[in-house]
Length: 433
Image (cartoon, rainbow, N blue to C red):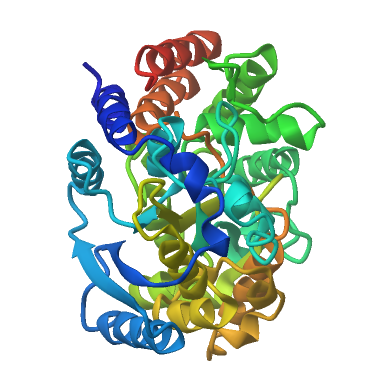
């Protein structure tokens, strides 16, 4: 049995028992916002108990308990490895924490079997203050409601080596804003006397579909329970990458690292490839440390199409015995002030509230590197239109396999249609129930 499918089925079985044991609980939780904030709740984080964050959480809990003297919060933290399995065990045993740190894909499995509080029913106004795309990440096509409060967020930007662009005959002051414009620049650089490579990584299915969205098409990779990224339009985009590969516009390292994390960043750091994507704090946290000579040449602008949004949030258990307290703490933890304080420690991430992202100076200290300050401003500006790039059904294993197939098509080992068909078939076979 597939791992994620097994998790979903096991949680479903456990949820059936848990909800049977507390008949009527979900209906009662719909009025959680009106209940008394009292009693003891458990709050669970994911690998955040350390020297950096422990003082922060200790203070937040202290402040909450001061505001609500009849409430007590017990904080537990789980290690990074095996977190999803731990959540499964908690769900199976009926011990799901009252407030739990869950990314959208993990929340999805629990929401499908009614184990998370629907925030739109519990408190319809509670979601108004959060980044819209991050709220949408906890609203799923096959469930009704919203099941998480956005907590801390990430996105990606385009990064360009201005020196290489200039040497290859492109204008570093007029950066590409669409994938087709990037293709044109890549062809120009590859055909220049310097024969410069532009592309540092193999595109994911979402990247392929984003190119179609740039032209007014659909960027969806999953519709009505079916993966749909093997369209004629997607085939054309992959074939374009293959054409650019023949010209030398796709670096060899891009193909060697297909499906592995950070391979594109490591490639760009060498200073021999003109374009990559990375997080908002890439210049200061990575490039200035590992490739300082590249820093003066780097330029950043918005990603193509809708910017990607990576979300961590907190959800409330639908079987909490103190639902009002759990909801009150979840909203307290993720209010604007507490989110700003958190991302000051979690450098490179952005708050989940709209107000903070309207003023990045409230949480991001000015850098001595001008390009980094520009990148921070660009990323904050993306938050209004950023969207989670993949549906919760799409796993890292699926993405890795798809990129490997696309890499084979780029090198001409298989056709673009075959690569995308293979990837769609693999994703469909491994689809979590």
